[in-house]
Amino acid sequence: MLDYLSLKLLSQLSINGILFGTMYGIAAIGLSLIFGTMQIIFLAQGTMIILAAFFCFWMFSIYSIDPYLSLLIIIPASLVFGRGLYEVVFRKVAGSKIIVVLGHSKCGAIKGACDHVEMGNLTALLNKIQPAIYDEKTIKDHRTADNEEFVEKVTEINVKRTVHAIMERSPILKELIESGQIGIVGGHHNIATGEVQFYDDTLIINQYSIESKSY
Image 1: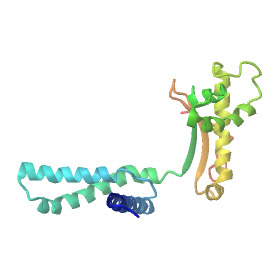
Image 2 (image 1 turned 135 degrees about the horizontal axis):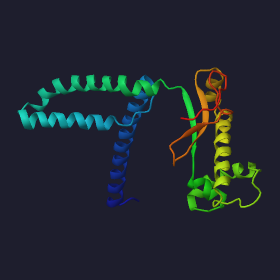
Image 3 (image 1 turned 30 degrees about the horizontal axis):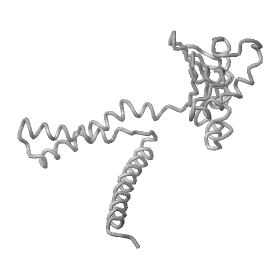
């Protein structure tokens, strides 16, 4: 039999579960609505609401405007601001139709995998890089993180393997890429110079690959 304290704890946990579940559900509905209309993932809606609340507070503190009355000003202003933000920033992001798989120089994960480091939960991630290490056949000696050339070659191979993995593991993305609706490319970011080099043998746009370019 459950005693009084157990029943009280059970009721509290049940109420907390319902409240948290409701909050998660509301958040999921908001994210689904935003993604469905703008085709981008936008996580700053809470910030926008808080910003509007602050403006409401300032209008009351500075101009003594009733908070309920200020809503008649804040809501239209927020709609105009949100629309402008979408047109200036998010619409350009939503219009981008290319997936970029980007590796970078002196990558710590690549170096860890080259030295076969075991780092708890990160070990599984490092193990996924091992096939790229095995595929690198040009360097026979000093196949460790101390060999910068070896690390960079493994990084390039890993990027190219990831591009192919995306095509193989996601039938939806593969269909979109093959139909020309989106593109995909692998590249390398040199963190010392800021240069990004794209690999021509990974670039697929409208079913055509083009020459590698640096920017």
